[in-house]
Length: 89
Image (cartoon, rainbow, N blue to C red; front, side, top):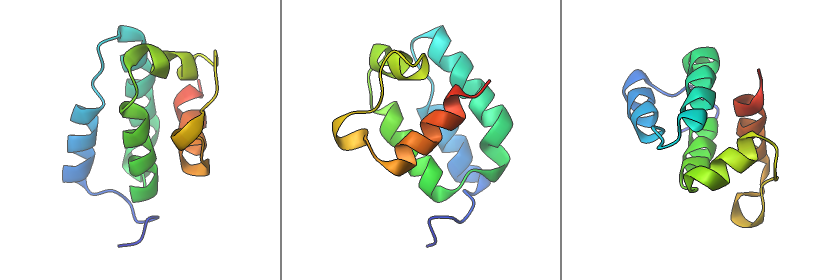
């Protein structure tokens, strides 16, 4: 499977469910992200988004609000790309 292949509708639905968060602020960023990019999200971007969703709510919010930048295992190009997409207004 090509990482730049678009995510299928079923996988997108599962990803949206996986992205539900405990903090409203995170949910607002994520909702905007799916409104803007959901129809053209690639498998590679979906995998990077999943990595971000493995973070705790406060850690994710710090990244979204630019209080900090990705570090350690998540400090890679695909994750940074999706983070820029999430941060875009």
